[in-house]
Amino acid sequence: MRHSATISFCIGLGLLSLHVLAESVASKAFTPKLSRCPPGTALVRSTGTTKQTLGPDEERYISTRKRQVLPAAWTSYLHSIESKAKALGVVLPEYVSHVLSSPNLNPTLGLAISGGGYKAATFGAAHLTMLDARNETSVKFGTGGLLQAASYMTGLSGSAWFLTSLAQANFPTFEELIFGPSGRERHSKEPLYSGWLGQFDYFQPGNANQSLEYRNSLLSDVMGKFNAGFPVTLIDIWARALSRHFANGTTPKNILDEDVPHGAGITLSSLSSLPVFQEHAIPFPIVVAASITKKLNASNFFNQSDGPPAPSVVPLSNPLYEFNIFETGSYDPMLTAFTPTKFLGSPNDSICVTGFDQIGYVASCSAGIFSIFNDSAGSLEANPIGGLFLQMNATLSQPGIELDAGALPNPFFGHAKEMFPDSDEKFLRLIDGGEGGEVTPYQPLLVKARGVDTIFAMDSQADNEISFTDGLSVIASQQRASLFSSAYSFPRVPTSVETFKSEGLTKHATFFGCDTTTSDAPVIIYSANGAPPLGQPPVTNLSGIETVFPPDQARAIFDQSFDIATQGIPITNVHGEVEKDPEWPICLACAVTDRMRLKAKAERSGICATCMARYCWS
Ligand SMILES: *[C@@H]1O[C@H](CO)[C@@H](O)[C@H](O)[C@H]1NC(C)=O
Ligand SMILES: *[C@@H]1O[C@H](CO)[C@@H](O)[C@H](O)[C@H]1NC(C)=O
Ligand SMILES: *[C@@H]1O[C@H](CO)[C@@H](O)[C@H](O)[C@H]1NC(C)=O
Ligand SMILES: *[C@@H]1O[C@H](CO)[C@@H](O)[C@H](O)[C@H]1NC(C)=O
Ligand SMILES: *[C@@H]1O[C@H](CO)[C@@H](O)[C@H](O)[C@H]1NC(C)=O
Ligand SMILES: *[C@@H]1O[C@H](CO)[C@@H](O)[C@H](O)[C@H]1NC(C)=O
Ligand SMILES: *[C@@H]1O[C@H](CO)[C@@H](O)[C@H](O)[C@H]1NC(C)=O
Ligand SMILES: *[C@@H]1O[C@H](CO)[C@@H](O)[C@H](O)[C@H]1NC(C)=O
Ligand SMILES: *[C@@H]1O[C@H](CO)[C@@H](O)[C@H](O)[C@H]1NC(C)=O
Image (cartoon, rainbow, N blue to C red; front, side, top):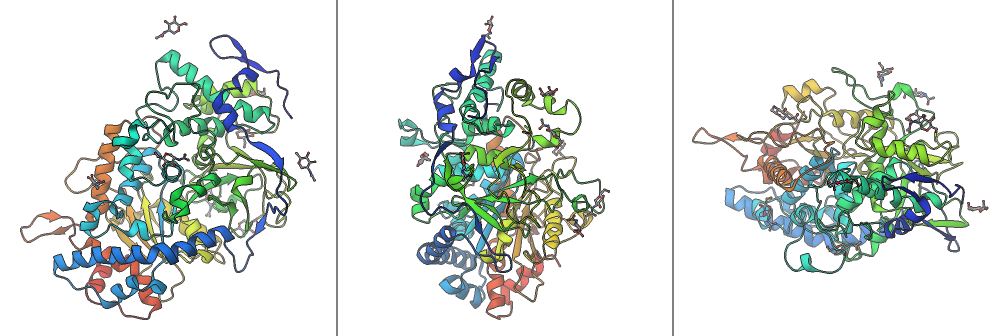
């Protein structure tokens, strides 16, 4: 519509009309469709500012899950922890059993997984395996079942790839998710899920000629969307590359085929009809993206108080957006508005767009790190996506569209004019959720209407020069929450990397928020990628921007992350050897139930008093 359709460009095999390219099956499936909005459609839901409300569909999902699924999940987790206590010869405080077996006292648990590429996805997956009731090792260990008992899980960047792939594959085990299913499914004719295919580079999956053709097919995949009048940016190209790894339908055999949709057409909103959502069997997934605004508040950049400047692209005060299967928007006080995810891209409430909310696109916005490279001439071109950038920039005429971020038609145009910095922008510019510094997506779990009591945070951001975690994202999240103290409460955490280092807080599990006398802020169970586990050479310290991640490396990182997750604070045993803390699973249960203990006005006692003294940062 808007764009002239006569552009053509060299794809290395001669000049082809982009119209021809746009005919590919993936391009068609990636093209959003316009139609009349259903009667009564409201494209903006205001959440209210003082007492925020959840979207009705989320409310229904969570309340049904809490009624029909979670009581049994908490009870079986309790059985697992009771067997563990028995085996260790310790007695659980009565309140732990009471809280876990009384539906009206069950904690609301959120799982937050940091960004950091494939490594972060794998680090998260290994932790969730420890919490998975489907894994017998984890159930025997006394931690299996917490995953099934959680209400929410949040991801950004690499962990957004993880959550979208997990949800669209109908919640397989993490083993199957990463490495592909074994057995019958493998031979199915349906476009099923076949693992992350990390052995194939995102931009060079074959020999030179194959890779050139492949990159051209990434471009042709987005041409239908372009021809339909929607802006396309590097985020769309990246979306199409990511889909070949994290969505159903791509296999090692067909990854280079151009007549396969490679996940195009799978939308975030459509996942609500998958069995796992119909049965309320999966913690509600939320993906976070940050944004570049023209009117930024330069006094709010995240600064590390005692180290080199943190590499943030946008101030902490820029809006953070969340995508869920029902809604997209922000609870941040400057916006407090949402739009239906299934109608993302709509120009107004008479014409509704569908098919914009492709899972690859959502994951790609959340992992859109290209603006990091757009700081000095040439560096964007030097990026692995640089050739595609030059090709797009030279061939697609899109005045006013910046290619380094996602360009989402602004659902909140004209909204909250006083406060919302993008109120008068036609497009929101979405970027990697961690680009303000908050690389672990705590924010959705701090929304008061969600009532989250406990957050299990998995942080594997590469903070230091050897790509281990130093706690930066915890510090940034605390700073951000204090900018919006009317909306969010964050527990007291160290304000400097020095404290994390000197107290070893990233080298073993740590609890934050134990000292509160009010139950306002959640308890955070923090497990970081701060060091290799006991006696092992490090394999989990990667920068997080790898474009290739072969299965043997995934396996090594997965196994080592499982050891990090399960070791707790190592102890010296009676033989003088250092070993995993045998009581760690019990201590985890103490932390998970601590907020409800406080609400029930019980005193910490017995093994939980010991555990909290050992694991709490004070
Ligand atoms: C359970 O997790 C452990 C640790 O990752 C793994 O070795 C084992 O294969 C898993 N079991 C199943 C049934 O997935
Ligand atoms: C993806 O494949 C899995 C099986 O591997 C299937 O259960 C699921 O429904 C598929 N998802 C979509 C969106 O088609
Ligand atoms: C790549 O393409 C060129 C030109 O068509 C051809 O000469 C060359 O043999 C091809 N190389 C490979 C590895 O297929
Ligand atoms: C920028 O942030 C500072 C500190 O939070 C605040 O005092 C100031 O009013 C903000 N300025 C604008 C223009 O929003
Ligand atoms: C962060 O550092 C920059 C540059 O030194 C400074 O302009 C800004 O005020 C600092 N921000 C905060 C929140 O202290
Ligand atoms: C809604 O958007 C469509 C497509 O851009 C446009 O043709 C129409 O005029 C718009 N309607 C209103 C009421 O703005
Ligand atoms: C991108 O395109 C614009 C407009 O055609 C041009 O001025 C600019 O030099 C191009 N940028 C690069 C890096 O090629
Ligand atoms: C790089 O950033 C500048 C400033 O925000 C913007 O004007 C420009 O369009 C960006 N370049 C690309 C390729 O997006
Ligand atoms: C991982 O840690 C080891 C040991 O400190 C170090 O030699 C290596 O360079 C680190 N790897 C990365 C990618 O930083």
